Length: 348
Image 1 (cartoon, one colour):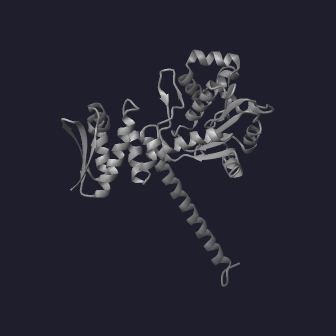
Image 2 (cartoon, helix red, strand yellow):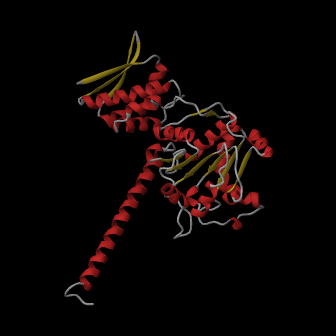
Image 3 (cartoon, helix red, strand yellow):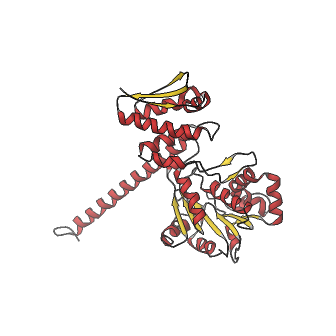
């Protein structure tokens, strides 16, 4: 039997690692084939990891050590955090977890620090810091928009820019603006709601309204960007998969001096008419390799919503791969039949 022991400073730290009804400990036990138990002594609590496989015991200990370090920075360890730590250690990337959560991007009105929760998010934040233009591409729930807004708020507070401009294409699941009630502002508000929500959380409703009135914050449909030059601004284009190539080029060429632009989108959720190419899809190919432009790809591992979101994304990706495989097989079969029909001995 192989064993590792990790000392705990307080019973509270031990409780966080074990989780509600020992749920966190069971997740670690199931993945690494070990037994995790608490041992109290005169010198304080400790967590004992035991198992037949030494590699499993070592991996479980590495995972618990990371969670131990993180437990002092958060109120509780969520299922997503524990699962992410388990996945990273299983993939041999456990050592990279040490720096995660060290940097606070900004603080919400309720005093909650906003930090990168995954290595993918941390790399995305670093890319925004280093580059003038960043394209953040990936599935829903990975924090693409929220972290971009947090970086914009930070830049505004630190006076790196004088205003924040947030924009989205006014296309959503086939609906048209004309079908919505009210004036133009009322019509576009539903499309921009995720951006409002992020700003409310970081700035508070009252402060946000004041900044909007002063023109420090501007939220508008993508079409309103045409013909403008945006200097001294932090500009975010959200849901960019719904922009056409022409709109994407128009947006990127609005960039002025002392400005930064972040483009976010999910290429699997395009709402453009059938046959219309996504501007985001084109941009990641056209702009790859250009200095001062960063392209960051998120994966399902970066999802920080409910754990089922990650499984849903994986299921859809598997379905899409299977559909593509079947379509390729059909094309190959049609091509083979056509060759047989038109080849030697066949009918022309």
